[in-house]
Length: 428
Image (cartoon, rainbow, N blue to C red; front, top):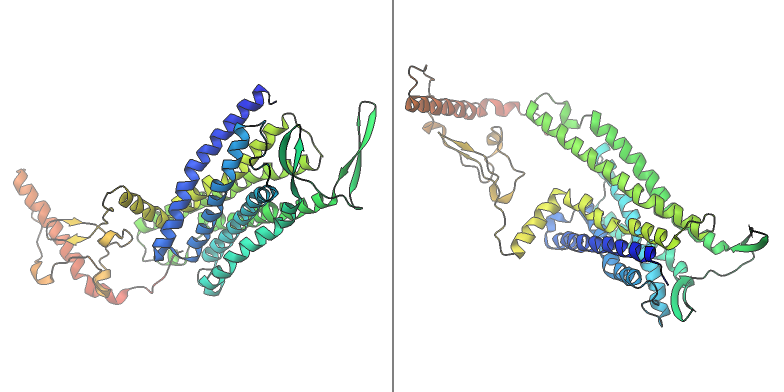
């Protein structure tokens, strides 16, 4: 029978699992549906994020409900007491999905590093062909690594209840350790198969991804925080654009730091502690509480991954908002359009595309879609008059004349500046 402390701890862990499901299922579904519906979101990087969502959704829907049953019924038998296949499936599924998440996160990290460090080397970027090769391979490798582990999982009965746990075969290469309790010394066997599985799982699921992510993200942080992009070196960039790009870079730096820190914080305690406990190297009190807490922290990736890689991705965020508004019956948010008149100038992006912004130089190339301009003939230069009276009406006329003069000068300067346009550059 479970004591009061164990029961209370299991209830708290179950509440966290429920919160994770509430966050994970809708968020990952939105990412997957948005990627399926909108072809513009099917870039290689976004497809990798979608692969994360698929793995997270599988855990949230197929594994966590079983964990909730075990936490709410600590003294009950396995949920499927007569099915060895379900026992093996429940052992293989979460481990394979977690490994696939680690592989995908590492690939996203490498792709970001190459795109920012070498923006002009197109042959290094993730293409759709490479993506379609990577996605099935990541799942095949993940399940192949744990098929052997799943075959060791079996059902056994103790005190009238059925339990699902791996039972490793004994072999000549097993390690025998002698332990002494009081005046009694007895041997304890550490199976070589168990050591081999941990030696395979720890490097591929944690050590190698952690080393790669930490190294590349540190280089990116140093590059973005103090470095300059290709177009930052031109002398035609306004101070306002420079400040904006600096803010964007530092925002990216914070996201990169969060990606790496959260991955290590949620995986390092789990892998190290569970491995040492499983091999019998250490022992802790209330081992059931410790193990279930570490498993919950490790599986929390299904909740924070869609936030870090989905919500902070503007493409996914805007598409998800439009889908939610349409689902609840609201019209999708309209973008901004830019209109130039002799009296006022308001900036709005056309047709819901907030990335298009008005620039006087754009008229020398072609009038952007949704931009309304006034012909030169209708705009006559106005001369600012000195303020002779403090009358509100005269003050408004003078202010209107000043606006008209500024707009006229900017439009007439287009033809003279069109030949001085700098060569097009991009800032990743």
